[in-house]
Structure formats: structure tokens, C-alpha cells
Amino acid sequence: MMRLDEREKSFVAQKELFISRVLAEIGVSSLEEIPDQTKIETRALLPVVIRDYKNLRSEEAEQLSHGYWGNYGVAPFLILNPPSMGTTPHPLLELAEQLKSHIPLKYPVEHPMEGHQEAIKRFGSPDGTLKIYNLDGKDGLNSYKEIAETTENFESHNDGLGYAGAVEAFCLYADSAPLAGGYTYFQNIVRLSLALAKSDPEAFEALFLPDAISALRPRGKGAIKVEAPVLFLNEFGAPQCFLRVSSGEYLITWRDNYEPLVRASAFINYLARPFAPASSFLNLNRPGSGCFARNGWLVHGRTSFINGDQSNDCRVLARKWFMTSERHANYKHVPGMHILAEFAEIYPERFGPEMVVGDWNYDPKSGINIRHA
Ligand SMILES: [Fe+2]
Image: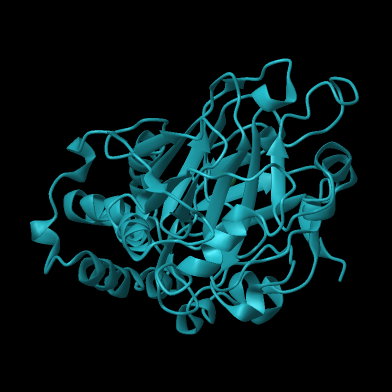
């Protein structure tokens, strides 16, 4: 069997700190006490009902905080006074502002697509959120669109491919809801990884390999290829995951020449299916429903949905990303990953400072990422 080389061994050694930090956060003293979390039932989440989004009550904020920092890493909500679409500030931004001391929402990022001309044509002036809606039929079936911009299933992923793992939290908010379907589901990969650490330590360790998984978005302005560990310590030493399941334009491959990683990928991909054991889900099924989610620990996905003929029967989600630090609150598009310096230094060609700044693009002809700015 293939063995790890010295560089790989020193890199995957971050697993020790990873385990102790996750244990400390969930309040468990040793791996031995971790139950078989893969037997936990799937949970339908109920929202925190918010009377007035402009005046969040302290008990509502507490409940949201509890959801975000709890087992599922999600704080679903339903506001009872959703304003008409186009109202500024957008209600999700007003909520985020009031929740900053509870949930890491201090550093929102302005996404270049927020001012997209198609979105402005459909929904009016930008309101500080990015709109996610079905683009099918806009300009023929052959035009390029992201899987997010269809009514199809969108498999599990962390948000922010190309942002080097700096998207700490996100908010989704239904400006309007579809006729049917469109379940949003979540899995707490960081937390569940401890079950693997207990049952198959070698497989768990393999998830820290620098090239464990490769995610390729091959086309368009967002073309990028990211090779990274599935589990790692980020630049602040916080445990984090990077995971996607192939979906639409996203092509995901795992390194396949190391048997423990093959076992680990089977474990992880099993848990990343929609409605898998220990996962949770909700349905953003009316205007004013939404959620804050812990992007660094969770993956999430969406099931397919049906839009109606009327615009208020069509799914439009407003989305905002919140970054790990103020210095990441700018657009970037990079192949690297923010990893704790002492480990990043082992692979400067992958995770060095120049790999996490600028504007890079994947070039399909050469098969590599090229920096433009
Ligand atoms: Fe997403």
C-alpha cells in the first residue's frame, strides 16, 4: 500500500489539534466518548419565529445563536413582517446587524454578482444581497448557467469556491418561494468527522492530505480548480472542512491512490447525501423564511423545485456571505486555502501567501490556474 511521505506526515499532523479543538467546543473530553453520530436521525428544523425583524428580541437572538453554535450549525428563522421585495436595507442585513454579537456576521462581503444586470432587470436596484433564481429559458437551453441558477438538485457543498475557505457563515432568505420543493439540507461534517476519527483513525487522518479532494468549476468567469484537504485548521487555528459533491458544472475528484482516503471518501460522501443520517433540513417556503449557517463546519445542498407562472410563485433567494476576517471582505478568486501558517509553510506552492490573493482563472487548455490580477 502507498505510504505517506515525510512532508505529508508533517502536514496531516494538524489532525491532533483539530480533534482537541472540536472536542473542546462540543464539550466532550475524549474521542472515546463520541457516540456513533452516523446513527442519529435526520432532523426537520423549525424556525425561530421573529415578530419584527427591525427589533430583534433578546430571546429570539438567543435562540438563533443556540441553533448556529449547536449540533446542526444552522439558525433557521421566519420573520412575520417581511417587507415587499426591493426594500432596503434588506431584512437579512438588518437581522445580521442585530446578531453580530451572537454569530460571526461582522464582515459581509460584497459579491460582484450583486449588481448583475439580469438581477437588476428582474428585481430592481441592488439591495446588498445576491439573488439566486432559475435562469432556465433566459436565452436558450445552451447558454451557460451555474447549477444554483436552475431548478435542479444542487448537491452538498461549502459556499465560496475560490475564496480560500474565508466564508465563515452565510445567510439565505426567501424573497419569494416556489410552488413546491426546494428543500435546503445541511450536514455538520466537522462534528461528524470525529466519529471517523474514533472508528478508523487512518481514514480520518487521510482527510488532512493536502490534495485529498479537487474541485473544478471549469467554465465561465468563475473557472477555478481548488485542490485541498477535506479537514484542516484555518489560518486562525479553527477546525474547518472543504467538501463538495459533483453537481452541474462542478467536477469533484478525490485522490484515489491511498486506500485510507478511499474509505474516508465513502464515509464522507455517504453523509453528504440529501437527508443522510445526522443531517438536518428546512424548506424556505414563504417570503421571510431564511437561515444563518456555519459554512466552515457544514456542507449544504438543495433539492429540485417547481416554479409557478406568477413571479410570486418563483423561488428567489437572497444570499449574503460573512467572512472570517475584515481583510477577506473583498472579492478574490484563488486556488489556495487559508491554512494555519505552520502547516501552510510545508506546502508553499499550494497554500503559500501568493496562492490566497488576487484573481485567478482556470485555463481549460493547459489545465492550470493562471493569475490575472
Ligand atoms: Fe450554497
